[in-house]
Image 1 (cartoon, rainbow, N blue to C red):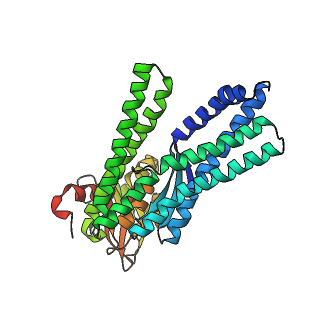
Image 2 (image 1 turned 180 degrees about the vertical axis):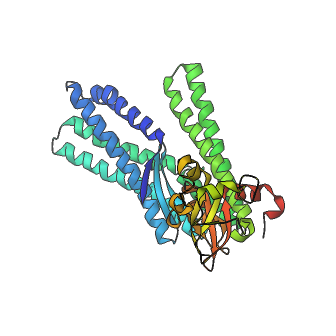
Image 3 (image 1 turned 90 degrees about the vertical axis):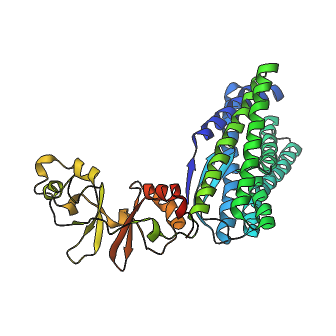
Length: 364
């Protein structure tokens, strides 16, 4: 499972480190060296990131137990996001997947609080106890904040599960949860800037920044839900470009270029076939352009193509929604549709965009 970091994580790590090293630690326990404050602040920030990762790993584990594949985890300012391949199969599964995150953070907070009390009883350095107590408090705060009923927070997922259970309509439930997310985001932005402008409190920038992230994430989730609603049940065969122009693997690049751009080779990517008609790769114009001009007369398509192992493949009956995550993650942004070992079509992200823009294609 891949774990990624959004750039906002660097912001939160820097803010946490500076706030602890130059604020809370020296104020609560003066007399220590600057090195001690900064070293402990950095360590505390790292442990905080680990607790965020534990929160998301809990989502991933429960998702897999509910038959939802997990592509990876991305940590960001508000915690993180487990990238799921597909939707929860039922409101109950959605409830379990969403609810385990805040519960994990709450449990981490309780364990850390008990550790702080134990270290204090053992007369460990007050500075260390302060760091552990801060981690306990921030994990409890993270659990409470993520439980707010607004997408994309875990509470928004819980709200969606409830609305889905009540209405039986997953898209409508998602729209309700994302609307709540945007409302909470705008509230935080307005109150944050009001605090800054009318009171002069620079700390108001913090909720305003979080609110902006909430608005952006909720809007993106709403668009994703609309797309899923439009493409639900649509097979790849309905969206793909059928019977694409192919290129023999043994053809030279010079022969290939001689046929374009006004002949049959007027596209930018072509399935490559062996002599028996089986597909062996994908030729892109970018690969052709990268080949030295003086060598194109002797260089074959096979030598510059993307081998089939680098290309996303699908079958005509496969749902577009199942293919889309793989298509977006692949740098080629294309999928070869293969039926019985032969090329049946080619599908790009642009093909899907056209399908979404065509109202009559929204339902099968």
